[in-house]
Length: 633
Image (tube, helix red, strand yellow):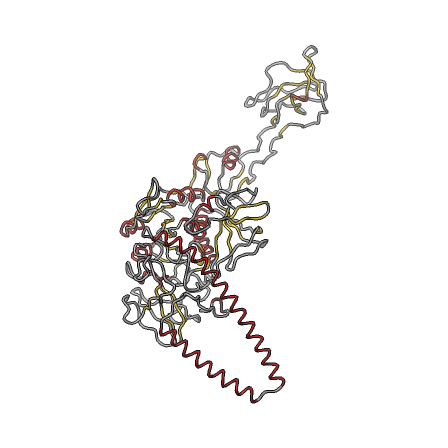
């Protein structure tokens, strides 16, 4: 496969090939060697000084290519080392009977897909790239799922392979064994899928739903399409698609009393219903005076806030006044208590500093005039917004309803209390997702714990009245990973099936039939689930709620961040002055790093050097400024 039409990418060392493929490659290589020998002999006979120079240049070019190949091989070895570390985490989870395959490693290079909204599926085999695709609903429950397959190039055609899954015979601990060849899906295979590959064309998979069409190169699954790409969608394309889907959702509106409007988004602008302030008021406790001093003090309790208009002041008079009280007619200034001296014997008030006409008086309409727009449509209702609306005369606001979210926690191995024991672990996602979603402006129901029960999942999905359903775990292809088969069974439209990001590769986005809710399938590993939440759920919810997209900013990173050779990485970071610092404990099963983080750095394939700029996704409870400090660096 040749991503983006560039140079062909050599397969990773541990990408399994069928024995027939290796024999064919050897034969092809031998034939190429014979041809090269014959060509070399002919060139020697016709050698000239100019030809000798050309040969030297060719030799130098070959040397440069060999050096480049060695550098690529070194990068692959580094990637394999990192993958091995991440696989160790999966092996630990496998001991309790569950893991997320392809979470930490993938044997084939995922194809990058650009965002092209107008492209549609073509008949099978018509794509210039020859990429194969099919939808999840093409398979019955418990069958192989779409991203279980990859197309490996072989001389004379393509064939599909199924990567090893938990519980595969011969792997022992349920992990994929790089040394073993991938299972070949073809004639006589136990899966019974499709038909054998013909020379020069991909293997074709049968579908009970009709013709299968591959995605055009550079096109992610679009709303309304009837396919899903077998290769993971790029991180930026997946996030952009979720954002577009959220914005396309129709926005309803309802009138809410102020006490219930917090966290909603305004569906109507807030316009001042009166001048603010609506009359001249005192900005300080002190004395209201008229004309120049000294001033004769009018005795009595003075002017208090909330009382009616007092008697007009005569020139040379003063009266006590409280903050917020209405300024009497003809008053020219307010003198603060600490800036005045009262002579009780003579009944005169003296100023201890110069008095400026209009000082410490808030004139009518200083903040706004009636009819001024105070807040536009799309403003998130915060506590200060509620205060301004109340001051402007509002008792209720017209706002967009909060998106409703259901959370389904999957996995028989999860405990809800106490210490891990008996091969079972604590559920970290159930307590975390509700508050996280609430901070994104969602109305979240209590988590439903469904275990590894496919029927319970099917029932919960088909009876949900939410705008978005989040599932945790079960998005891979293990023996108890039921999300894909259940979505296929109920006719869901699979929009994103795997994303080229680490952690979080097995995340998915689907839409239930007949205008049902969206479904975001999160991987079971905690940090991988956070990646899915920020990649798919966060932009989708912002659009449904009418919230603006998160602002993108690019501070410099303090130290080098190693990247995956092919995929985007999401790394927890903290702000340090005008830069960010990556945190440790960023494995897919770890939360220690993200618990101390201010955001996630979006690290492109290959990584970033120290001092380079990197995109940051702020966590909902943090902001880019002021810069905050963290720990665990």
